[in-house]
Image (cartoon, rainbow, N blue to C red):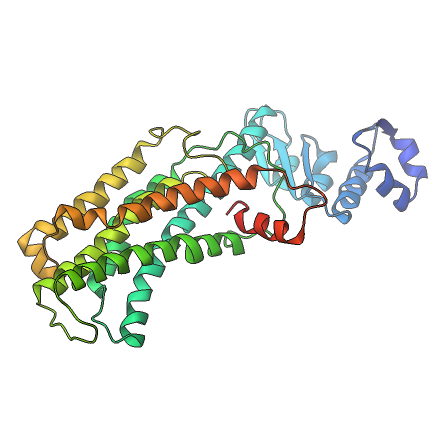
Length: 346
């Protein structure tokens, strides 16, 4: 259904009638005054819409000023219009607005990817201290190794996520709600409750396998310079790094499969992965760094202990994406809706 409303007709209709007209899918207002432009903007905002107005003349200034996003023409626009607008379109090309929206959405999503990646490692960093207090075991991860993760291995991969290109469906999504925040329940639940706990499980698995294989018994104290203890905490550290490699790969996309964006389209991600592995090997095998970080040399099988957990992170998140892309029937059972909410985009 389409409709054209002229200024004279707009003068004769009430506020309630205007609100009803604004529900028309294809609607054009013609020959309207500056006051009427402002009236339309306020009516749309009253309905909860986010309103953008483009203009170039003095008469457009009230609507530009009151809109959520006022866009003035940079070439033919008057100084008054530019002053009232939030943004100036330097080339007067409306397609630049579309490009700006796409860029804004991409930046917003990349920030969420960055946050999701950084938050995840907090779980395997804090759980060793909780286990140390509650279970009376030797501390599985030292403070200096936590700093090595936060200030060393996580930095470059995080920067790589910030440089990620837009997903192919970024402009097919409806506008996000005004109330949407960077930190959402789904993002926190995914980072802390699923991926973070998987990383923690990987670390503890490697840690206890090294200890029990070395003859440790539950409740036995180990000095900080004990070779077996140093090997165990190095294995815990290596498990976090290996799982974080899987984590940075799944954080590259939020809705689409990681294989759909191209595995090697973001070279900075792989520079970050190489940096992580380099720091891991340096901390594990360089004698001076062994002394500083309290670590020990690892054998090849120590690294394999955490590989199944890293694979599980990738497979699990790919499954989440697949499930979240499946449409939910209108008569879905409440349990189905709960599952759909859990696997919905982080």
